[in-house]
Length: 128
Image (cartoon, rainbow, N blue to C red; front, side):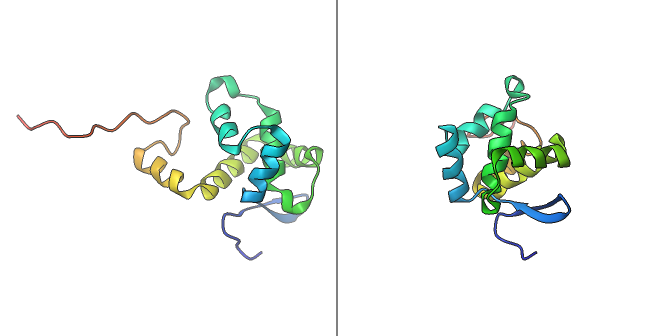
């Protein structure tokens, strides 16, 4: 498979696929969900969002829009690859879709967690 910018490759149902959160995928998600992709990402962070399968399935569906799948078919793919792998793929696709945010996240040291990074001090204290 040729690498397409922002495409996150995976295999399911015996064939190569990719998840990609393009502008069209984001619009597809927003039209169906009534919220932006960024709003969904924010809503899915934290303990209260655990088990938000509707958002997860819809985000995966939007990112697979180039395949013309139904949301139910996207859910079947999640079942095949497993929830942890689907979540990992979605996280990778989000970072690929928003590379500037991913770079900032890496610089603040929050690349592995969902918590907000603490604000960096504007100036270092003077040495005593």
